[in-house]
Structures are given as C-alpha cells and as structure tokens.
Image 1 (cartoon, rainbow, N blue to C red):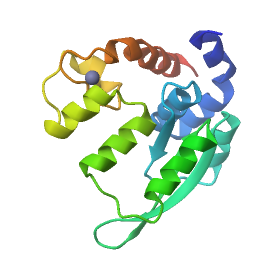
Image 2 (image 1 turned 60 degrees about the horizontal axis):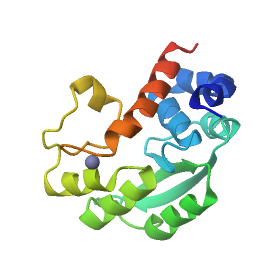
Image 3 (image 1 turned 180 degrees about the vertical axis):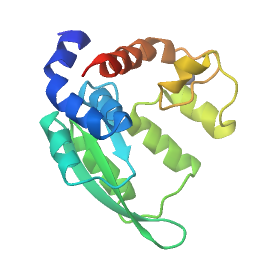
Image 4 (image 1 turned 45 degrees about the horizontal axis):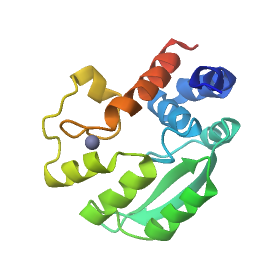
Length: 168
Ligand SMILES: [Zn+2]
C-alpha cells in the first residue's frame, strides 16, 4: 500500500490534530506512516490531543524528566511500536534533559535521522548542506553535506507536509 492511500485513511484525525497544532499533526502523521519510528513533543498537551494521537493509530506515553534548574518537564512520546517507546523510557525516563553526543545519537536513531547527518551535526551543528531552505525546513534533522540518505527520505516528508497543508 502506498503512502497516498495510507494518508487518505488518516484524514479525519489528522485534520483535527492540525486544528490543534500543525507541527504536532505533521510529526504525528510522519510517525504513523513509519517515516519516523518515534517522535517527542515537549510542549504541554491538552487532554484532547493524546486521544487524537491514539485515533491516528499511535501509542503515546508521558515521560518525566528534569531540566537544569531542577524543574520537572513532561514529554509526550509517540510511536506505532511499543518497542521504541520502551527504549526511549529505558534510556531517558527520570534523567535530566541533555544535549550530549551520546544523547543526540540515541535520539537520532529513535527519531529516524540518518546516522551520517547525526554525526555531522555533532561535529558541526548546522554546517552548510546541499538543501535549499524550503527543503531543509520540512525536515527534523539537519542534513549532512552530500547526504546519501536524505534525498530518499525527503520525498516522503514533502508528501506528508503537502498533504497536511492541503487537507481541511
Ligand atoms: Zn546524512
């Protein structure tokens, strides 16, 4: 089954999520279609949004962590696979939010980022790449220069982004 027919089936819940927040809807549909194994939402969610995520066919969990000041933050993670949610929880639940290279690598794996782009980002964040602004804008990873993976992922991001932008 192609991406287009898969998207058609998601129209109702995706449209309702889009009304709540376009970015959340975009991440959710990418994740539901398997383009991203797992996604994380760091802003607070209303009670209605987790239900919309599950209408879309996603499993969701809330993970409690802390930031530098000691304040607790609640992240919402979602995936079609409980295995990825388990891995995230095992690695990050109860831990302080961090930007270490090890964290960025683990997150990149779960979020479906090409490993070459993750490594490049760790060495030189936002180094010049081959994408124009409109191409880079719809991705969640920063593509590495000469990337051999992103050009094959990008069309799926573009298809989901266009579909969501056009849908009611
Ligand atoms: Zn790359």
